[in-house]
Length: 216
Image (cartoon, rainbow, N blue to C red; front, side, top):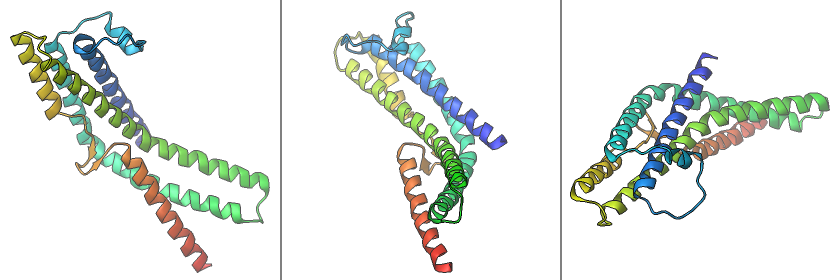
């Protein structure tokens, strides 16, 4: 329970950082982006009520990046424990589902109950892995969008000398300080991780099933 609550807290913090990056992206797009007349979402509509200058967005981005770095420094061990426990538990549960489906000695109601329980448990472990990876990937995408808008604004020739210097400094900040979460600096938290995770679980599931048949 304590570990799960800690992971839920971490996911909530990653989600809050993503929400604030989206607000910065909306402000940058409002100030320097092209007006295309598309329908505004909630974040874009919120930015219409306020106006941040480039220096405020620069400081806000830097503070958010410091929060992300501190979060990245404490999330490594819990996420590694989650990946290990989730992979092991998911593989064992899927093996039990395979055995239950093949068995003819179990009552159908009990069999259905066991299968539903295993599916719910596997889904819970899977979501705990996918949510932080998804938020991390979306955050990286939003930062890339900010960087693109700033780059176009610098090269547009519409800015005066001082504002161009400020926009260029913000652009260099987004290029040098990306929101990239990584477990111990090795395993990056993005949407490629769940795919590798599923592939590894499937591989070990097949191995366990084959060895179970050999032992039987």
